[in-house]
Length: 211
Length: 191
Image 1 (cartoon, chains in turn green, brown):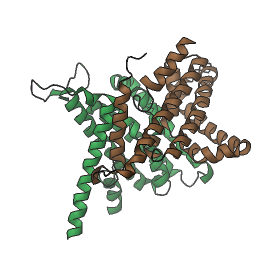
Image 2 (image 1 turned 120 degrees about the horizontal axis):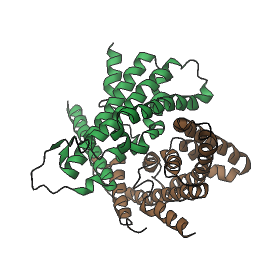
Image 3 (image 1 turned 90 degrees about the vertical axis):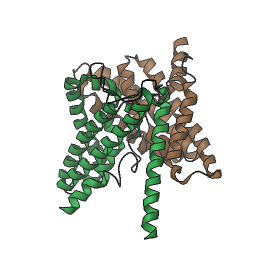
Image 4 (image 1 turned 180 degrees about the vertical axis):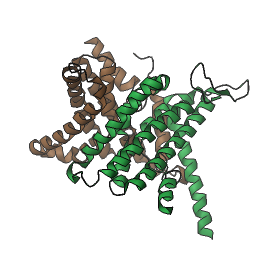
């Protein structure tokens, strides 16, 4: 039981993507113009990750090693198509905003990486916990990065659409920092956030070393 | 001809696939540490992307559309790309060993390069005809190679400077990418 919990929690800090596992950068950079967009992308990825991990793990004894990558991609692609159709039907606004990045979940290296490195070697329960943990870690990262960019770039939080505009949190005379919403802002914001996490780890390591 | 030149300039400079559209960022940060690997990867991407753009266009218009299976586009395209990459790898290995030496290790990485699938999907979504799709794929790949080589040129110099410890590695890479992207933003309005 303890090991299953640790498979789950490692995704939330020790190997949290895309910071510790530097994978899946394209959706991270592209869709995090608002917190909600980031979260939507994260949840879609989590769904695919959970089911691909589960099925890869269930089928791990039947998939020949030579063609495993192709088999994994077919499993992943099937769930991506499901997500694509469900989002188109029920979350059309989000579907339009995320656009090309929904089909591109197929080539998100996090998912293939977990299938190859974890699910193909572990039992279904552990793989499920791993998928859920990594997926939620990714969602959390995207939500945080999206919220920071949204807060500095537009002065709002949790903006979804014109009918659900979220909250204006900045003071009235706040001049939005439009750079943050543009592509260069995405790179810089992620870089600074990553450096910040490195700093925390260093301080933790120093404390650990002093003991 | 004029529109093709405009399309090329737009795909390479204005809507650069890496810096503005955010496709293919994993190899962008992963293999941009030295000039040699960046050039190799750039060449491999130009080669595969142009071919993949053409073949996925043909698959979409001559197989998926007549059979009314366009909702399976994602699965069909990724399988075509994975097979194509494997096939290209085998053909190059047999016919052009020196080229294989140069590109070999980058080819398998290209399957999961979202730039390839991304461009294939953009070709269809934008409703390009076959010739335009090939041009667009080629130009996008050139934009990819250009950004990758620029990035590698800058990152090679990091060896000579002192970087704050927390920024080492990917963090400074991302900020550099941001600055290159900012420079490319200057091309907006060119076309």
